Image (tube, rainbow, N blue to C red; front, side):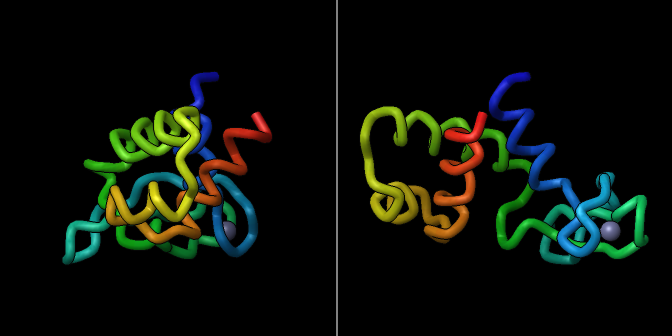
Length: 94
Ligand SMILES: [Zn+2]
């Protein structure tokens, strides 16, 4: 599986029951909303809009491979560092 798909799939895992979720429209501020097929709860991936998600993942992985620190990458891309760390962990796990 391609790493970008892998991370997107991981993000789409329900925060509450770890079930599979599907895209479920957008919040008013254009944030992608997901709905869990297991428990029917809805949630979003922090402040990242789905439009930019794939681009951001590619950039983050590129910068990780280039040896940048997670804090530098977060600053550079305007993301929260915890998100960069999460993607890095998923990348290493794969
Ligand atoms: Zn759930």
